[in-house]
Amino acid sequence: MVLGTLVFIHLPSSQRKPASPSPAPPPATGPLCRHTACQNKDPIAMRCAADPLTLAEHETATGAWIQVRYSLECGTSWARMWGADVDDRVEIRASGRDDSVRAAQVTSRGEADTYVRTSMSVVSPGMSVKACFSSAAGGGKECFETRTDKAVFAP
Image (cartoon, rainbow, N blue to C red; front, side):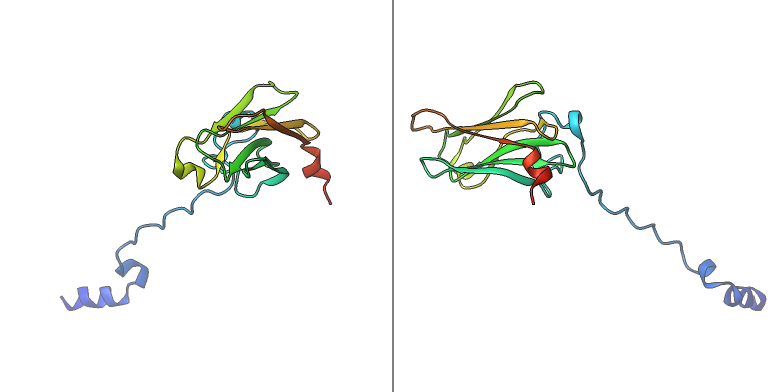
């Protein structure tokens, strides 16, 4: 018994302590997709909206705001809108890729009080990106256009 106690006392401390569980790995950072893997996906969910550039911003006749956002890291662009009314709609089209339109519409008062955004469109430097706003109150579309090279070469 004495011998057992002496052996235990003289064991290195790492052998006396029960093994502790290894720490959890740190959460992943950075985008979850790049370029074509981001097509039609949500920029927030894919972590492409962590540090995007604003290529252009437009205040509509109704007081809603539209921005064209660009993630160089993801190679994507999207539009976001705020200050809008229920049933207001924003669209974005990146020319030169697939020319399809991504759109988002305010569907509730809660959405009207926050940002509503389109899904992402894959873009390359120098591409033209067009955003349009349609008010639920009627009237024509309000559109504006920008280029992705504004983000790359802006001072």
